[in-house]
Length: 87
Image (cartoon, rainbow, N blue to C red; front, top):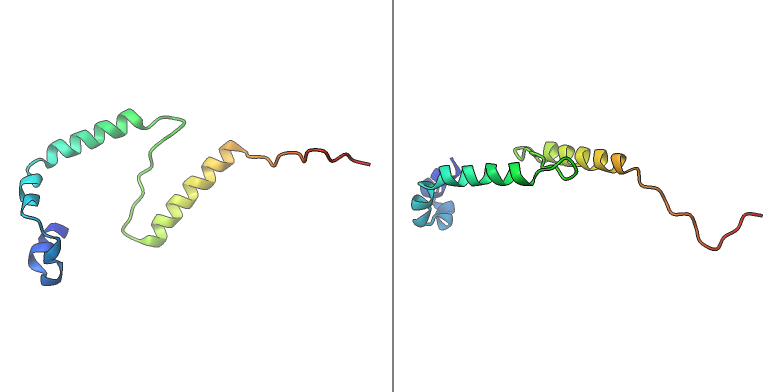
């Protein structure tokens, strides 16, 4: 859809590159490489997340939720102040 818009809509034609037509033929290889990268680099301690980007509010909610969950698992604590003694 986006690609076709670059051809059909005059104000978007500046984005069109004729080489994109050749690159589209390589799309199956790009998808395979992308999936392989995700499978090899997503780990239990450093997972990848799929974040939908169609609606900004929802994207922000998904990212914020992932961050909060990660921080809760870490259970960060403030350090004890140095050099202060209780009376």
